[in-house]
Length: 170
Image (tube, rainbow, N blue to C red; front, side, top):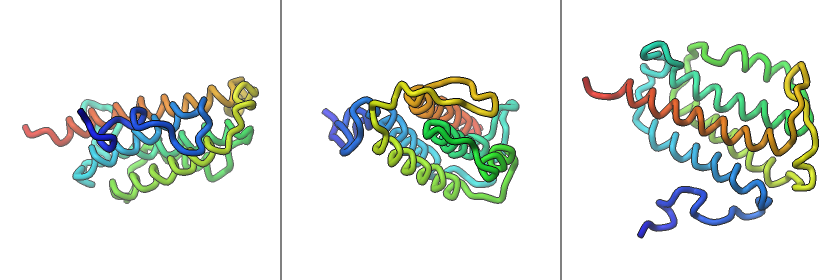
């Protein structure tokens, strides 16, 4: 039997003050943060921007995880992206003089912001329509919040594989 601390986040029970319908999204974000911290604890900074077989780099995924989470939460609040967010978006994937630990810290901080927003989200607003992007493609608060979790997990998987390929002994 596993201890509560070693179980996946969703098996550890409800998060305090988290609306019941948003627990799965919160659990996924916390799981992603934990897995990234573990998987990249010893990942070497010089490999951050390597693109084995032309796939996206670990650095790109870490930047994107932070940025897309911020953008989706902005849309869920019914807001448009700021000039700072648009600049961050255009810089995603561009090699930067950043360490793995800095990128992980930034992602962790964004997860904390996301959890705060989830806690403050009134479940009665989940079906409210929200526009996405300049074209204002229709979605809902729920759609954006759940996509933020799903999208995070998708990129987590890509990071894990890319990091493993880059650090595998030859």
